[in-house]
View 1: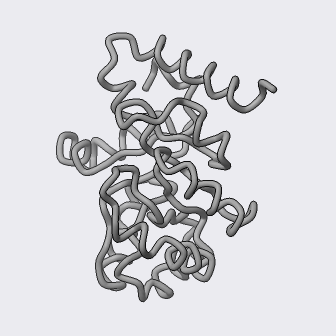
View 2 (view 1 turned 180 degrees about the horizontal axis):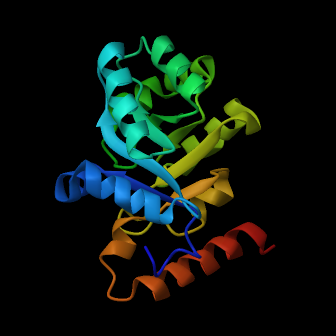
Length: 199
């Protein structure tokens, strides 16, 4: 993270990291980089509203700015209200990046509509699903962020999701598994700029 601090705008941390370093470790990590980075929790949250709120309270106390949540349980009006009041951003998973996300394909429009209804900060749509990113951007307008995982290891090219209307691309494993994370991150940023600005 120290190597990439000037190239990365946000960091997504998941269950594996939390199990490795614990809540105190997460809090220290976030505190160290909070001035220059936005932190998103990705703890695969999908539960009844009361449990969701309790989980989000803890996540917020640790220092996260936002959280990714799964929308399929529905009934999250109270959760969304809590998040808006606490200024904790929520990003609803509308489409996963792997090829067998059949249920997400079926319910994609319902998830987009529900995200709008809840006034979430944004949605998560896999970078490997460029048609869904375009569809979501047309439906959601500029009022919702679209963040897209699946760059690199899962096959989507750096910049491809941005070109289709995503606001941010999530690049995790490609950088983590690289022997030279700094060099790879610089190459990814250059490619993203090419997709965005080259005619």
